[in-house]
Image (cartoon, rainbow, N blue to C red):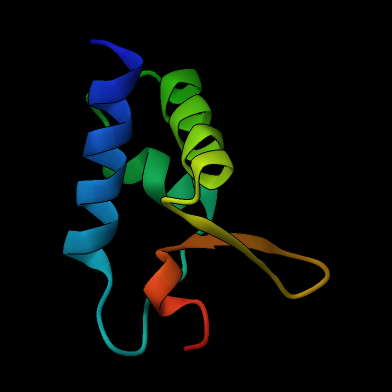
Length: 74
């Protein structure tokens, strides 16, 4: 599967799983949510999505999570 296809699946996963009250996820949550994909491919897709602005990092200082840009302030 190409990098673009994995990125699309990651974005679809976020759109499907982001609900009021739960919009931010750890990398391991996404990897576990996409068991058909190689762990490294999902990690690369998450990082590529943050570079191109499709996803955003969100940090508490000790933990880093990912979210869709529209959920950044929730």
